[in-house]
Length: 330
Image 1 (cartoon, rainbow, N blue to C red):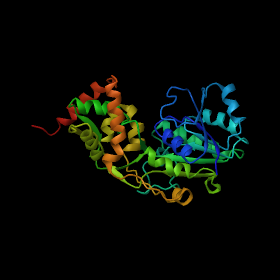
Image 2: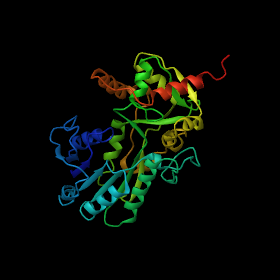
Image 3: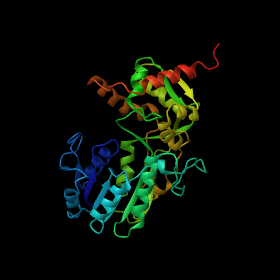
Image 4: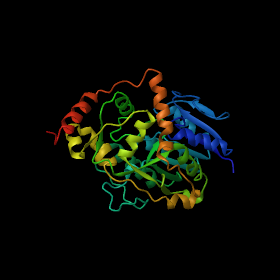
């Protein structure tokens, strides 16, 4: 059944393949965003509305247009969620909020994460805000919600441990060491955005998806050593990895506590039975080189255009690598 769908976002790391899948499935799709990436990969026939969520008057008009389904990729704070509830409550049949799998309890009580895993993350304010957003939408009765929690989903950006992104690729190409938390063997799930998109649109219009939360991830995890070495291989170099304990990294740079202690220090293995029971079975690429192919290609494109630039954290990374790499040497 064709639906009239609004994507808030729509051209980002995760959202663009979802827009493409929705349009290919025959839905009428409208994308609302600031227009910074307008037209980048959007299928023919997708309508665009340029605007800002911060403009309450114009944003409020979206609710009055009566979309069958709203996919919200750009809410990160409780204040933004409260605005969405006021805008769309009673005006849409389904509101899908993109949360994050980082909301799950750290450290987890069980090595396999399900939707029954508690949402408690005392280490990362990003995750805490997502948890608060979930609580707000769950507490109200007028907006039929579905919560979707992606884990580490890749398309444009290189997957890294401290959210350094392109800095890791630059350092590898320059022959500089890169930092890996712990011994690099902790299993970590990576999912291609294009693989995420199929089960995501499978939740559209499903009664069984209403007032339920789901994560959508690959069933396969990889060690961080393998992830970094595969990135390096894709760039035609070898990775010089320096392993550093989590607590040591956080002492060097306290801001790393969120992405490390609040996320990537721990194993991330997911049971996807719940979403498969509603959206249908799906397959994700399990070949790490294939999973990383597009992020590497996108990084190379940015490099060719004159970016990415050096990070202010690089001198600190050099220092950590030098000091930690010297331990135990004569």
